[in-house]
Amino acid sequence: MLSKIVVVESVELKSHMLMESVGQIGFGNASSTYTDEAELIDLIEDADAIVITSRGRFTKRVISAAGNLRIIAKCGALPNNVDIKTATELGIPVTWTPGSNAASVAEHAVTMIMNVLKLVPKTMAGLKKGKWHTEEDKANELMGKIVGIVGFGQAGSYLTKFLKPYEVEMLVYDPYVSKEKIDLAGARKVDLEVLLTNSDVVTLHCHMCEETHHMINKDSLKFMKETAFLVNTARGGLIDETALCEALRNKWIAGAGLDVFEVEPASKDNPLFTLDNILITPHMAGWTKEALIREAKGASDEVVRVLKGELPLNVVNPDYVNFNKKIY
Image (cartoon, rainbow, N blue to C red; front, side, top):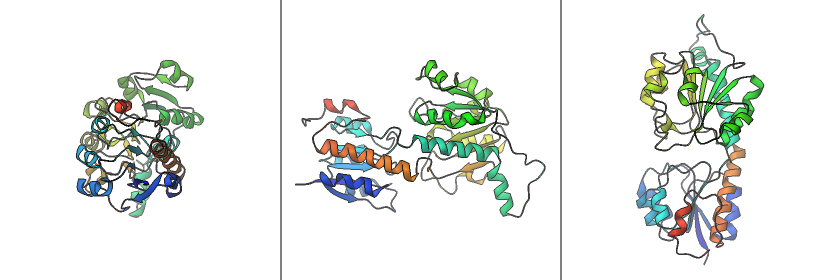
């Protein structure tokens, strides 16, 4: 009997079809955000493998309802929408595709940096209302600026390469990366307060966890220059949005670029959306054709391995083997 594979959100159909050799593939509802647990359970309850993105929350109830589940394969970054503890205790490996969208995310960060420095959000909104630029609408060069990079994983590393032609000074805060590695990238390792105080642009590229939740808050925003810009293409929870809204309204900082939000999909009533000194995009930094192909293939390869009785490679919860009663 063929295994059942459910692709909750099809991001790149051709790559997913690689799984046809090991199972029968079913697809979720492309128009659903899967905020309802019952809808997710109905979709995956008899699945042997599921391929997911950031859409939907795979809670204890959802995972526990899928009694046949042998793998949860996430396309892209670490799966913050999966109850890792429950998956581990049920002996289910959770995988991800590290680095598959890193270049795309770094490119998006550069795009946001350029747009906020050039005052594109404000001047474009004004032009649509028939307003030409005013005396106060003086844009900024990136050349020679100080750029603070928070998190030096693959996206942060790509960013240092993309920024070099602009002769910027790069400061990096990442307590888990050595000074030697950061030096080799042409950057300087500093603590977070030094980075925030000195940077003309602060761009976030770290994982979301208890330690980093709201690392950008009212206190940290006040360390930044009034002329500085904040960019986030990582995870929405890194920033306290209430504090950021206050900072932008009161001109504690000059502007911001956000691709991610604390609650997604973001509501049209989000107060940040009323401001003219912010650039917003709908969590699409890694959503490029090229990255989606790499992510889908990486996730599909993990499903094929597990359903063939092999061990997965990029596992978020390696302790699952202590609970898994199947022999690989």
